[in-house]
Image 1 (cartoon, rainbow, N blue to C red):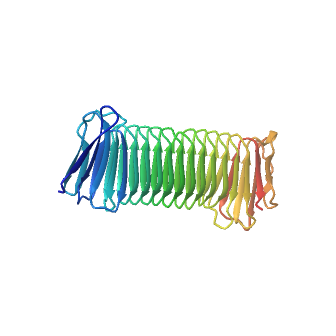
Image 2 (cartoon, rainbow, N blue to C red):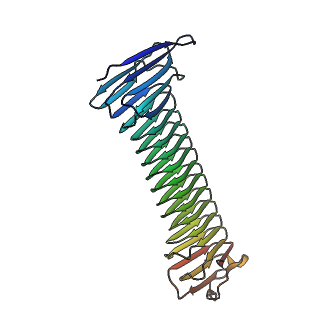
Image 3 (spheres, rainbow, N blue to C red):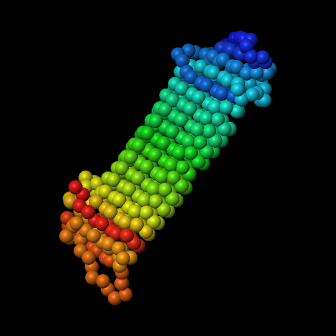
Length: 359
């Protein structure tokens, strides 16, 4: 073990002291537990250095054992104004970062990182490995994470700029924003969710907010109790809203979208195969844009067509069926485009079903 070098510096504030040290020359894993704000970075060095500012008689102590560097405080009751800054070697494979009463900030760490705080914020950027982070209620912000990300907040927002693998992001109340993800995403909150680009599947659940997915290389599953759903481009959609509108701009594969009272606006992707699909609303319009080259069999039913527009189509192949006995107010239409193909089922209990030619 390398000799610990500790320097105590008097502060201009009454009762406050500063402590600096250089420890743990050969450690490849580190565990840091301290009150107050915790800031961790890496540098091209072989040892761990730190600078600690706190009031009272609390001091930091370091222990190196079995490849671990343990850096903790000698007293648990330290004011939240305490601050610890630690510089780690770049070769550290794993870092446990725990603040007992403040925020956690980490940058330029090459290995896996786990961060814990009871209520403070968590901020990370340029992390080479996987990240696990938990906070009782603070906001969480991640710049570049090259590995996977699993994070949980008791109520703060979660924002991610670029994720190299999969992500599981959960918060009790804040919004979730992901700019780019190379893996699949599983997102859950009571607030809004926005994903700009995801290379694989996206599962998003919100109890009240709006869900927006710009582009997904896989299936998008979006569930919200009262907000709307918007998907730009995806290879399949499962969308369900209890009371909002659903807008799908360019989707393929299997598409199933339902809302209790909102409208549906759906554009199909003519460059990819459509699978059996269903669009339904309890109270609202359905407008679907179908490419002229798409092979599909359309079946539409509007249960309250007596006082609405029923079913309207820009394709002559899709024809209204004659009403049968006992079906007063029911409007049915059916037809095959380009020889027919997978079924596209449209169902409304009011409003108008419009089947339009995509231009």
